[in-house]
Image (cartoon, rainbow, N blue to C red):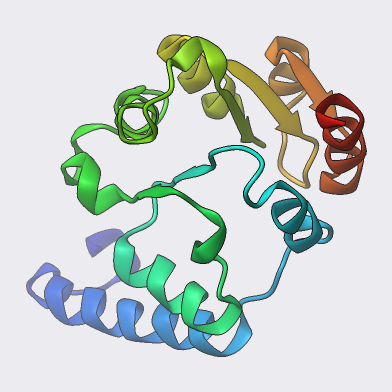
Length: 164
């Protein structure tokens, strides 16, 4: 904070302001990624789904209040449940916790993400990794993943074919 000219003794105050502003943004502006809702709707009741995120529960709950997306998931693992900063990706703790709660062996799971750390995390957990080529997706993620897709719609089409 010092390098930005902010007194370090104000860190808690700044964190509180940041959190309030972020919650407000999520509450009022969260929106679906293109194709995400249709994909989740098509999988509902057909396979077990888990959400593993480095976001805190308070943020996930705000997005859910706006989009009602948690209803698609059989388990949700947020940063709070992973012991705070103790297990960031690519550590597989969150994925392994989700598989345990779902009662599914990691080798029967696919982790879908858009970053190189998502690929590493999936592989460390003993899962396949599918990567969606997003705005910030590195070429390495596309090369190291088990499968890559240009969009969620492309993934949806592939899963429809495989699950039919």
